[in-house]
Length: 263
Length: 271
Image 1 (tube, helix red, strand yellow):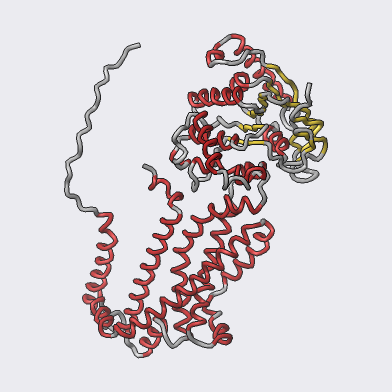
Image 2 (image 1 turned 180 degrees about the horizontal axis):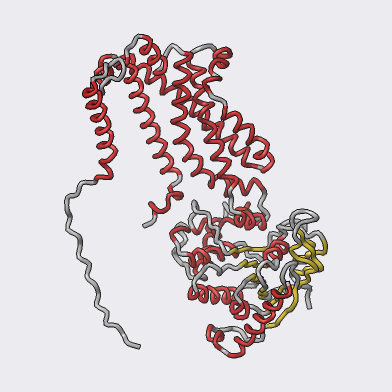
């Protein structure tokens, strides 16, 4: 088998100097190309640290983070990120917001002006995929929370990242919108050649979407269990009500409860 | 489950009625009210116009001395606007510079605060030593007094970029310059334009202070000499002209702010 896209080996990360909090310790994780991995754990277990390590926003004090066969020493530009807060820039239209990464990424920024039409077409196609066709000219604050989060996904995907990092992207949404967006993500993962890491508190979300669920311990965070999700793709929302699904969610819940007590 | 019988509600268009828009009229009514109270108060109390002239007496003075009032008003407007424009350029530049890095921010901020605490009137004599009396000290005083709020606001806009936005861009390989150009500067624009309203009114304070102490022209000088002649109505006429100029410039800045950063007033733009 080919080498994994992301490989985190024995990583320690401490914030704020030698006496600061140890966020993660002895962290080991491998993510294969094309895989959908969900990371769950009690709050404060270093899930966001994991994201920042993988994207190169933080460099670990010990151990190594290897992304696409090279050790991470500076931000890696093959990732797209989306957070719980959509952070759309209010002075740009939705379409201009989505095109923002192209103005930054080295590969595209010099081509953007001359190939504008091509990129705009691509952005509009993405908008259509997430069900926002025709909303490109609207400003983000004219969209609902769910729609902003969809646009946020488009922005994370526009430069065709190999790795998509999602930090609780659906945390602030209502249950129905959340389920809708689960399906959007599911379809994106099925139709595009992208590896997704989803950090979440929602165990049902993790089991419904992921190929592999990674459970982290309380601070200092490390991986205490990895579970392959056995359910076949494509998965439908009905899966949420099947006994096997709920059993798995319950098992995860138990593990996290133990991890919390241990802390 | 029962199905509810839904009938389409028919909207009745509201009858067009003539209504006085009190909110729009309020500024005018209140201003007129103020003058009326002033007039009546002075007349009842019988204060001599060398202490507090009635508004009618003040308007009389405006008509009577229109030529010098006009000339000095233009002079004051000129020094104020010039000082203000320098403040805008310098304030924007220094604000961007300060907001650029945490170290510069930490280092320069106390100096700026200390500098701002100095009463600008105390600087006028120094400016006179350097540049002589007249227009230059007035312009510089207007500049010195009005650039601080611009600097602080621009720097604040830059310093309060959401960390998530920064993370998203940095993960894409954005340099500091990219983040400043794409996010920082547009983001600080509402703060900047908001500060212009404060700055322009302060600029009037600066130029008039300087004109009063060290000039041969301008409203400040005119009021000072009127005061030494016990021409109190003319002093009030000068104050009134200043108020009018101040309101006009403030309104202009408010309009510019609305034009340039409509996205920051989203509630009024939605729908």
